[in-house]
Image (cartoon, rainbow, N blue to C red):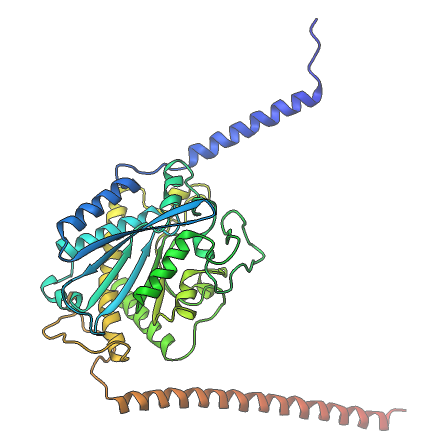
Length: 426
């Protein structure tokens, strides 16, 4: 008669079987990449190259390669300049857009591709009169990075559907220098690995050099996971102070009202998303690169998806939703271009050009006052804002003084009553 296997072996076999079953269940719950809807990274790049070749009068493309300690990364940068032969005399607004910083967010790169088609081949989008919008485009130079995290995207396509990191396991949106390396209580070393030092990663190095050489007026880091329009800061629960913050918020609130019917979350990333993020690109663009309008756009999220079902959580899985998201956010970028141009010129951050016979997208009347203001009027507005802040601080001071006096008088009254009571005690 054969001997029964020892109890530890039975337990080990049972544990292994349960582990395999659990893994199979998780795998079955994970939605695969919808390859009939989404481009592969290679096919998307080929399509962009073909588009650049067809429209060499407006588009150009650069491939930048950098290595660090045996790890190499390529970055593809597409530049749209409506009239390439014109000299940029300071009146053109520079816009830098980055898509696909996290590999699992495939939808962002699809928006980049469609946006390039709209800019060059005027693919129809509801509510846009391109004959009028051409006047806006003449005043812009737009650089598009369609897949910032090329190596990380490859890992996702190979089956690592939840991976947001680059090819050697670093989160590129934690590898920048502002507040780098700080870890919150809920820090996840797998998700948020900031690297061994700020700018240790070639992708971040290339983007930093691009921001230095191009000097954008508007920066947008495009992500998915929810729908939101964020401004700095990510690493603290506040927004910047002063005129620049007012300018950013004005642009986002106008965009949210005009296009999203006030349905998008607007504010600082750190104050709105539910957690603080340290070492992010947008905070660097504001604090160090001094970009006047640095934003983070979150363009899609499925709140009902399981946390293990990353493709579904971060990307539309059906064609109808896919098309709706792409069209909605391409339109949002066109409105951003329009709003950004107007606001930057009103604030005299770029010199004023001509926008004769130009009609806002959809024929909408922009709610804010876009009439030209004299320098004296702008100065008076600044003084008025300053006086408003002083009045606010004075009111707070008076309120706190009153409360302190009230507490002091209450304490004196109680002491007197106590002393009076002691006199008459038997």
